[in-house]
Amino acid sequence: MNIPKVLILFRLLLAPIILGLAYFIGDDSKITIVVLMYLGLISDILDGIVARKQGVSSTSLRRMDSQTDMVFWLSIGFATWILYPQLIANNYVSIYVILAMEVACYVISLVKFKKETCTHAFLSKLWGITLLVAFTSLIGFNHSGIPFALAIVMGLISHIDRILITIILPKWTHDIPSAYHAYLIRKGIDFKRNDLLNG
Image (tube, rainbow, N blue to C red):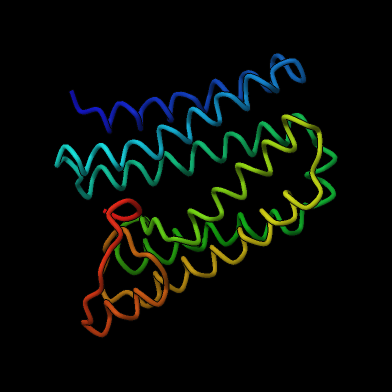
């Protein structure tokens, strides 16, 4: 059994469940959504680790993981919009900017490499942590405040990094820690990768 692929498919399956809970059940589903969000995060952490331990990590698996991450977090974002429409309305400019930058990441990569972006960058992982904290605070405790603002700021910073990575890279590859590392690749300079964070 390909356990990493099962973990990725599990996370993908969570997306429509989370949306369905938010839409059809509403406020009473908040705790369940938070629990599913953490289960999705655990599966995201484990799939890469298990893949490397089993020696089954591959470009196709990393691409599948990257696209599933996007679908998973978008589902939580839309669930939040369903549960807290006014909060989204109050922050629509910054949210739309982040969404536009996400689209830009894909467009630039598709135009340049004919493949979608798959960086798994450090700042993107950090943004994921701030999203987790923000959604936990918001959905679990009805509080936005600093956690939500921090997630917005990190979202903007991480997307700038991803766009720079895609622009700097001379050819498509996956698991690039940062724009600086993309520069090293462009210059043909080798660097040590962290086995826990990058494949």
